[in-house]
Amino acid sequence: MENVIEVRELVKSFENKMALKNVNFQVKKGETIGFLGPSGSGKTTTIKILTAQLHPTAGEVIVFGQPIHKLKDPTYMRRIGILTDNSGLYERLSIYDNLALYCDLYDVDKSRINEVLESVNLIQDKKKPVQKLSKGMKQRVTLARAILHKPDLLFLDEPTSALDPVNTKHIHAGLKKLNQEGTTIFLTTHDMQEAEDLCDRIAFLNNGEIMLLDTPRNVRAQQENTTISLLLKGNRTVVVDKGEEGAKEIYQYMKDGQILTIHSNEPTLGDIFVQLTGRNL
Ligand SMILES: Nc1ncnc2c1ncn2[C@@H]1O[C@H](COP(=O)(O)OP(=O)(O)OP(=O)(O)O)[C@@H](O)[C@H]1O
Image (cartoon, rainbow, N blue to C red; front, top):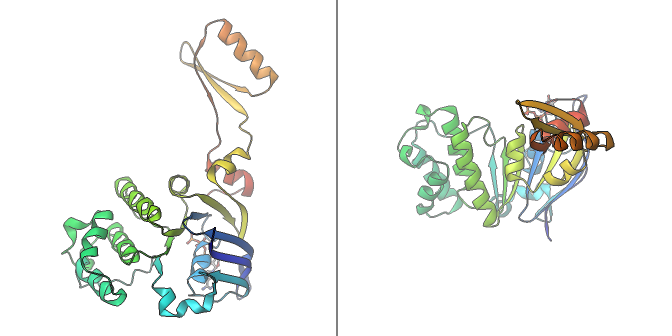
């Protein structure tokens, strides 16, 4: 399948700080890929390079089959949507009018505005001026703006960082729909659950290096889940190893009719990140 993004040996240095160190990855058309990492690991720098807001120090970055500097060309810019925390919204204009300006810029029919406002749960608020909105609402307006023109490639820098669980769910549903309609999505997040819900593949980024890049299922499968929890009569929980000794213990409890439930203790993606990097997200 066609690669929408190709990154080879990417390096980015700021003065004496190396923010990205020999980063390599590809993103296929129609994929949703997530970059996960703690603060300062290089997530935003990666997005800024991929959207031609920053120059790489070294390496090759290809988007839509073209070297990155070509992205400044309006033909390519139209194919991209970007959500960052730098909103650039017009504070005195209403939500609707902010989006209407973008419709003119991107040559999009204004009927699309209500559609995107539904998908970010803001249809009731469309007449409100941006300056009266909460942080989470502003984040949803910038997301609406990023998807207004149904981009082929959407970059989302922590898309739900300011949102409550209800709106997060709403946004996730909207993003899945957009992805099903063909938009390739590149997102960054601190949130493991978000990565699992949305991403076909996830990259663990630590100190500017990709430690692991795979499907959430394969990432989990690489780690041994070493224990099994047994809930016994009398509300007692026992944790046993998955080896022969554990099997003997389980057999004994079963024989004695003690076991109420059994479940294996799968590590979460968060646990795996800590195992790999020694750092929390
Ligand atoms: N313009 C800049 N000048 C100097 N250093 C920078 C600049 N931008 C980023 N850095 C440094 O590069 C590293 C990576 O930063 P980046 O913003 O990409 O991290 P991040 O993973 O997005 O973090 P966060 O989750 O906090 O947004 C950090 O050490 C940061 O201080």
